[in-house]
Image 1 (cartoon, rainbow, N blue to C red):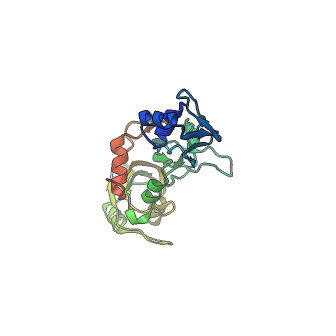
Image 2: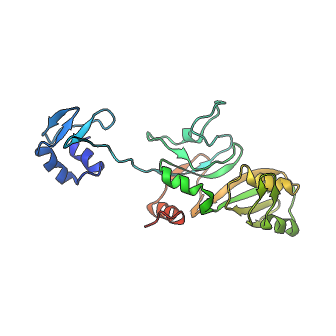
Image 3: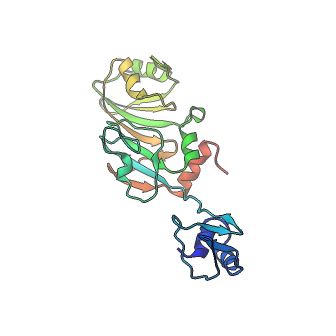
Length: 235
């Protein structure tokens, strides 16, 4: 890219002001002073300094909503060689999943390179709500739903109160704000149910919408702002 654009994207100055900095002889590439405004720079390979101080490009934060299909792991790499959700996102930037969805669970998954936001979204302190639809092996009663809502005693502690409602046939919509391992499946198992299918429809303010399995989209600016707001990063 052009040197003035590089300096602007690094947050040093506007493109026009960056041209003045170049013309003043304050910029060097790989140790050599540069005053030609047409100079090109490789952001990954070249060592750019202004007034003797190294200049780096600011990381462009990426926020992606994916409809996770079955049989994909939500890790960047898998020691068993299984397909990763990252392989579905054909972009050059490095991103990672926010939290996890089980190998056999589908639905809304957020991926980003924003480490601070990811940390907060998955921290128990902020209690970000996640909504799932669970298809069970049999119908659930109102009495059993009431038990579910109050909290279920598991080996690693009793779950916090949650929201749960019966949908058509054996389907139940459940909203939790914790992140225990395989929590939803274990809650139903404790009550004598087997979860045949599980998919996530909401994560905080984000909705899955009409994305098909394996499809993804970039978050809208207002969606990013909404995510940041619920974890104390909003302006």
